[in-house]
Amino acid sequence: MAVAIKDAIEVVAPELPNAVKKAAKKDIDGEIWKAIQGVNPKPWKSSDHDVAAAYHIARLIRNAYSHAPFAPTWMIHPNLQGKVFAIADVVTLDTTGLHGAPFDGRHYGGPLTMFRFCRFVRTQILGDEPSPRKVVPMPRSAIYQVGDMMLTQVDEIPSNAASVEIERPPDGSIPLSGGYVLKSGGKANDGDP
Image (tube, helix red, strand yellow):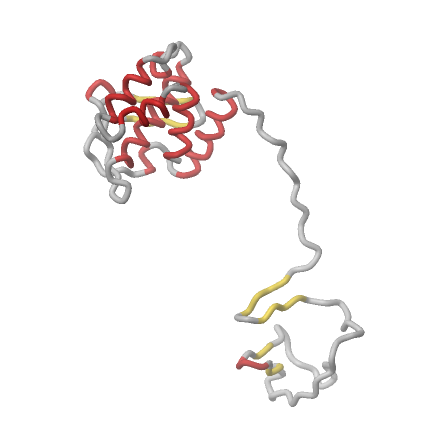
């Protein structure tokens, strides 16, 4: 998600990649800040409340991971503390008391909320048309994997099936190779094949 957020910022601030190259590990944060400051209109000052909220939420989530990806922590600028950023029916982030706290996806709604948030940004802010959903047909037959065996139910024995003579135990089960045993859900009949 951090990469997608970075790409979205690059769409808004096309000079960002050049700023990072120009900095060459010296004051990268400063160069990135200058590139973003040069963009007009600024996404965080947008007159569209949803654009501004989306920017703040995405940036705050990204910042939580940027300095410690394996132990993310909320790093919230003093001007953004104690505020609620929300996009109706999509995502809400209340920054009250989060600065310095361990990151928890439940603070903004969790992984499914992130999915809805990404979709909202793509369709409502970037203007992408979502591809129509494809109906995936249900499979005609079920295949079950048991260990290294693949099983499927058939209505009749295929004509090319090999015949095998086995002695069935008293419980009616069918011993298979490799220590596997096939058991019926009901009682075995003497005439069962």
